[in-house]
Image (cartoon, rainbow, N blue to C red; front, side, top):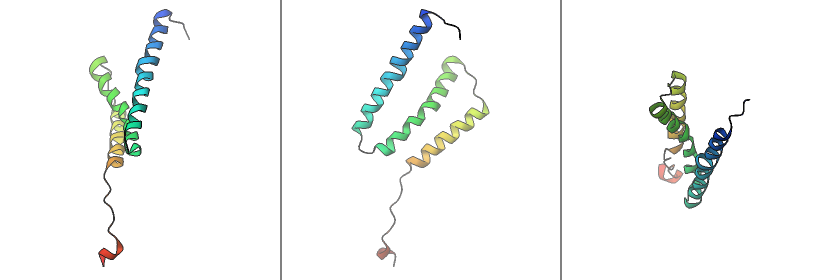
Length: 95
């Protein structure tokens, strides 16, 4: 692996501190403030679709069919997980 110098090192520090570090701290603070963390915690999986959209519009990265399939699977799984479950009727009420 070739060393890219101070520019590469600065870019790595930037990504580590800002894009990952601060985002992680903010995520942890958000998780502490909500009462239903099990429901909110899966929203972290929205990161890949958001990244995909940003890469497409800002950088011009091509979106492959396999990527779209993965996006559909991620969003479908999140949708299933976020659905409200209706409580079952008590047995006495059904008779």
